[in-house]
Length: 318
Image 1 (cartoon, one colour):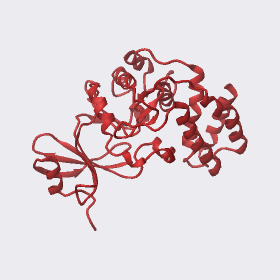
Image 2: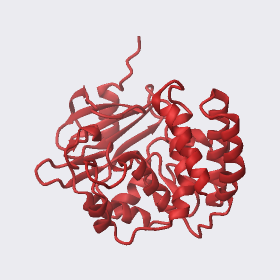
Image 3: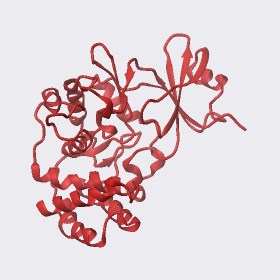
Image 4: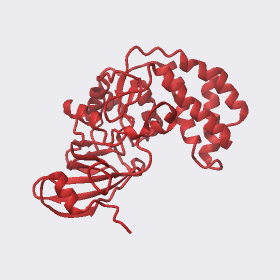
């Protein structure tokens, strides 16, 4: 069977340097969309990334609107991040299948640092939340020029934020109804009370959202100083509302209350600066977090039984 890894000869031709070894790189958390290897070069160390499956989390929800084959190396977003002094990966070589027998792969310059483990095991955030807040604020200061998923070349595919939100909502509502994770009555309530509110959101200009595990699964850090040494995975960048990203962060990290050991939102805010604050708009965004999970999790799970109740409660508040 043909090897899944480019040959040493191919990689040496791509990088223009001697390669001493190629070995699988263990990924502690995530890594579902790529196979990764460490390349031992004379000089700078590199990481070989071989994409697999759907690239970009939100692209799969709006595939009929966008050419999903334009998500591969995340070149535009990583270049933009590094121009803002954010420690994003630098592409050493990218093949879209034209140059080598093997096909598509990306070689990145390796960033130093420890990879994040599952946040539910944390006893206090292992990296500096304030530093992450400052990084996210820098990304949010960028106007990508359009709304929805941002491809490798900086192109977007929606003219307005509500149009993108409606496309995602259509996907979730139909998927959840089809698999029975929401009832027809809840579907009707969402269609009547929630869906029209998406169309009324007025977002003048987009911000660049990171949207990939929101700062806990895709960070490298120095274990001694807590300094962030790498902010990774830009394949799901969106042009949109920073409050949408922050709503997802609250979903993952839970409320900033006593006993929550995952994330200090107050310290995050110190680094971020002036956080967007619109309680009504946050409520409008919250159903996305539960509907996304209900579109794929086991319908017999505890979450699948609880999430529709939370969605109904939000609808009652809207």
